[in-house]
Image (cartoon, rainbow, N blue to C red; front, side):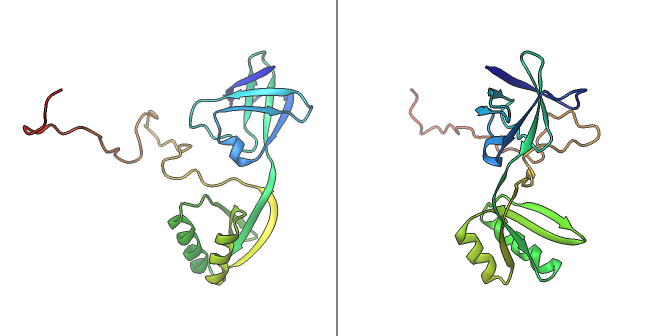
Length: 174
């Protein structure tokens, strides 16, 4: 079985295609079937999210292109940019992954199909329509993928709280 374990920026040739929905592209360990029918194992660095068009090299040197599968989603449109921002706020408040899109100058959001969220968004006055589409949500502030000039990639974007046991004189020693 081919093992895909190295993400590369470019390749002279592509030897295969792996079509995956988003929930599988965010896994670091995965067994899947390529378009050709060949089974592969995917082993990426923990926290890696494979995006549409990413390229992986296998243990035997073959190169496979990742394609985002079309999956059930909702396209959310607002009456104004401010209204769409309000919808995005309410989705974020529910920790919902969302893709931000722009088509012909009109912004939209794309979320996974969820009847409860659809009802909420329609209650806010948004136009919500079901569509089969590739889902590419924003990675989020802590999701990586953003590299700032001069950053060596080893610093978080925000302080991480330390979890320390505070020892008090009244604590019993073990």
